[in-house]
Image 1 (cartoon, rainbow, N blue to C red):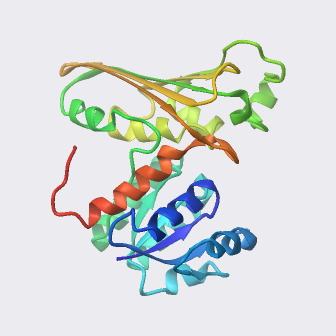
Image 2: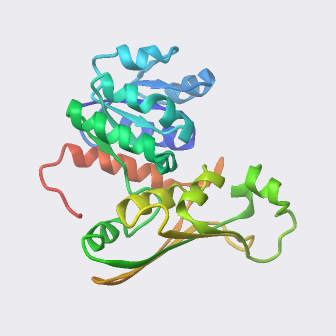
Length: 273
């Protein structure tokens, strides 16, 4: 199975290395694409097996060798490329899940994939408990809450914080910088809480999933805590993730989750919900 990669940042580069080393199963990286060409060149230079570097968006859709495309770029990339990826006869893995908070796009992708016989995969990403959320959603769920804690550096240059006049420089203790629905969270923190979107899709939706975001200068890891309460019982999970040094808002577990998703596609025994 051949894979195409859109986005050569921290997650994309880590995923490419995992594919190159064989840790993502029987898959091969066919090509990479990024708006910043130098990122592609830097990524490919460190790989044993050299994928093609695409220079035009049209090449994504013209290619007939790749079976599945991984989006590891941004919510805007999902909005711009995802439908045409499906129409070009390829399956799709989406990492910037916050883009799917837009009901029109989500419905369009579902319809297009169904009509074309294509698949869309959303890895669990940087959180644990997505399997429990999916199973619990078959019965009544009364409450879903996500608390995300990250070092202040993870929120650098965030427009929502600038607009609200929230300053994190010199912060000495934890500070709640957002409390609201998942739909609002993925809009105001598009690069920081894709986990909220994944949890929403697995459970009760964007408007019933409640999110609290905390900037904490005392921690060095990205911490995600989930609480689900419903007819099936109560589920509590907590993950303390190692962030990428060059991208503190992103957890390394996210890249591993995509590699595991690719590996699952070639395995005959599937473990987990």
